[in-house]
Image (cartoon, rainbow, N blue to C red; front, side, top):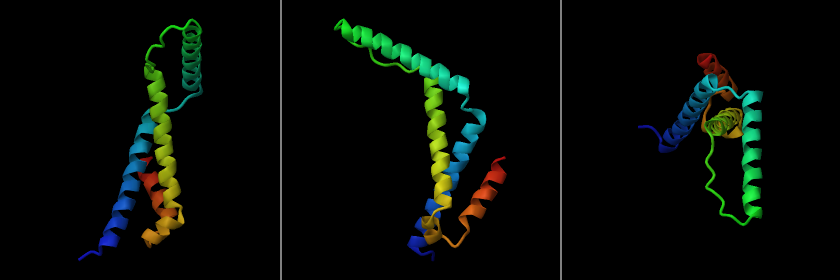
Length: 115
């Protein structure tokens, strides 16, 4: 019978692997480009300018509706963060507490499989 703590430790590591794979797959298909970042920044600036004009006229502010590009950039950033956090976990002392595996070796193999 597996020790419940060992089972929990394995589940934590498995979830980190799943998170990393999911984020890597998303980021392979959706790349953050300078153009995308600039377009979203321009959209946001124009929206805020328009909202400031409405506010100055004491008119009701419309609900903010994000563009497709804005949602895409937010998803890219979210997945970059997810991947970064998983990689940080594999290199952490906490990983060493949970497992006898070498986290950096596991991460390297994971990246090889994702390539």
